[in-house]
Amino acid sequence: MKAKVYIVPLLLVLMLLMAAGNAFAQQEEVTPQLVYSHSIPLGSPTSISQDRNGHLYVLDPMRNLLRLDPLGQPLDTFSPPTRGRISNIEAWNPMKILLFYEDRQTLLLLDRFLRPISSTDLRDINYEGIARAATLSSDDSFWLFDETNLTLSKLDLRLRKVTVETPLNLILDRERFDVRQLREYQNMLYLLDFNNGIYVFDNLGNYKKSIPLKGLASIGFRGNELYFVQDGQLIFYDLYSSEKRSMALPEKTQYITALVGENQLYLFTKDKADIYLWQ
Image 1 (cartoon, rainbow, N blue to C red):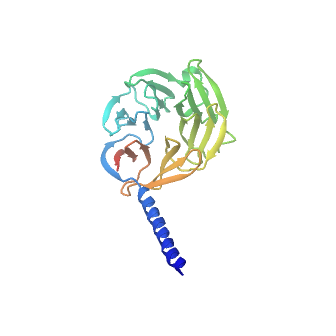
Image 2: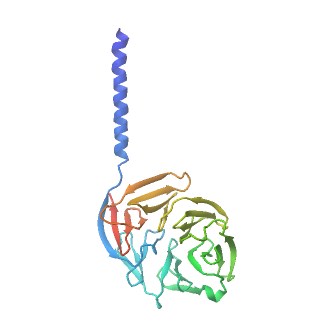
């Protein structure tokens, strides 16, 4: 009988400790709160980029390129001498910033002071086809998606020729594709097709796999995750485990895309950028 007197309280204590531990763990996993800071007018919710130092690159309503500090305050402005539609910005390397003009088929590189380094018209180097999206590669070449020939190409401007070409006719649906973005990250190349998802290639242009995430206007990368806005949520997708995590965005505004900073979150509508602070 004495054994029972002591065992029952011990089990109760263990159960209480486990419950307290679970409650503490739940408190530790509290979703960060967003505190609104300010907004800036915007020219495009998808022609956006972020460099490795946390600076943002966006277009104002006049299609000028703005560089913002991590707090969302303007630092520099680049006003193009001739107007055109900047469809892609790649600024991860702040020493070499790419602006791609789809309508002019032009690759423009800027230095860290937003001064032009070079400007290349693809038609002047006998590039065959029409590039829909472009990005920088780690070896200072350019990745291009050609929508007429349905190919993925690597262009070496030093040699003035394509050095890698991958046919995509067996991968993309010619009748339904809508390629929005190219981005090289961690030695892999990601091609975003709004209608079909994300296609992943290695740094030699070899097709590896697809990620069935449809209806995305733009994607970003941070750590081992890619992230995107969908259905009022900011969703993070682990590039290696395929696990997802998400957080609800403020309901009052319909956001299209996002950039994630160390202490800030930048959310984009079709005509403005809202800057929030993580709490």
